[in-house]
Length: 174
Image (cartoon, rainbow, N blue to C red; front, side, top):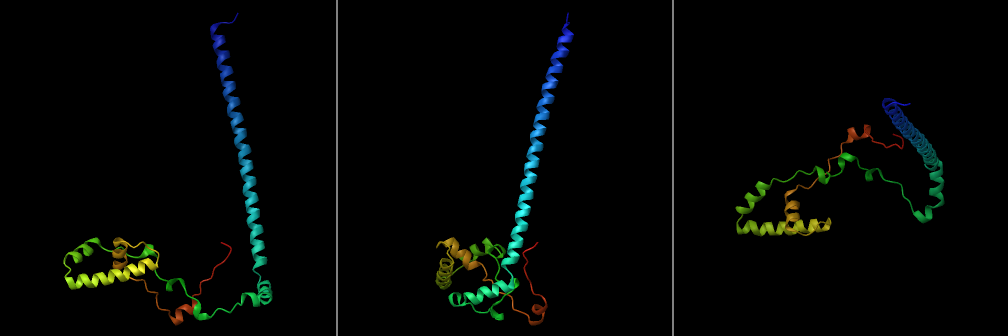
């Protein structure tokens, strides 16, 4: 006859066998998922290589020259003049780089303004509202104050000697 202790041990063995089987099954599913993901990664890498090769074929100078000659009447392409090219440092500042105006200065100047300065501020705000509306900004007093307080970005002057040696080019490959 089986004793109580033997029955408990049989129950524990059955439970551990069930847990072991469950863990093994989950591990096999994870291994299958890893193999599937590796296959997808390989497919994507092969696709990238194929697209790079296709880009190299599409951007061959001989092919582009032949296309320009074939479609010259329709496209009416003109060579780019060297004066039409700009460097990144010659472009105006981004909106994120424009310094934020000091709020206390704006409040102090608004309190001490006389009628003449109020009239000139109205003219200036009308000009900044025109600039803001031309840029697509909403016509509000906040936008006028922001446009009036921010400096207008000016491109850096072009140097003759330094730009001749420092030509920035882009590449498809990284």
